[in-house]
Image (cartoon, rainbow, N blue to C red; front, side):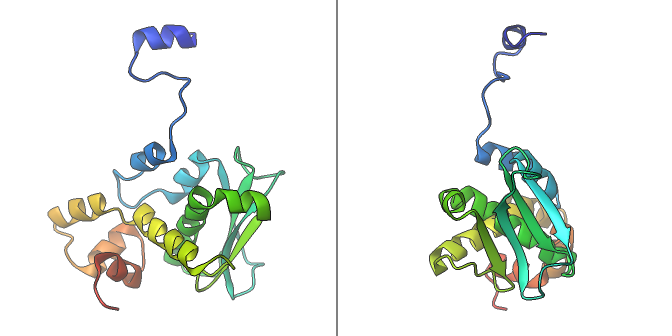
Length: 175
């Protein structure tokens, strides 16, 4: 079936109009836990786990012409860290890709240490952390889970596969 035939049969979803990052992200906010790997792939990012990163480095996003997915970038995650930490690192690097792509294009890579510092400004790192929290713990999912009986920090963190500390920060509870 041609694109024109698809448009005639379903005029509300033209096949040739690319989705915005916000539209792509919204698709992943309907089920817990958020499929951060699927999100990365749909954004054109490859994700690699490795034991070769030093323990002081949680992850990095870098230009990768050989394996970088359709965007030309890959995310490398320290696979010695806990799975919830790896998920946050992936979300944090996705946030850099969405918020700071102009810097990625000029620098070629951003490396984040275990405190999620990359050499960018504190404001840029704070923005990436805030967006990572939104990616993994959208309030729409938190509210839905709460309405279904998951009311404690522990149960919400377990359902969203994040750390209790990350969930407390997201909920505004002192850590």
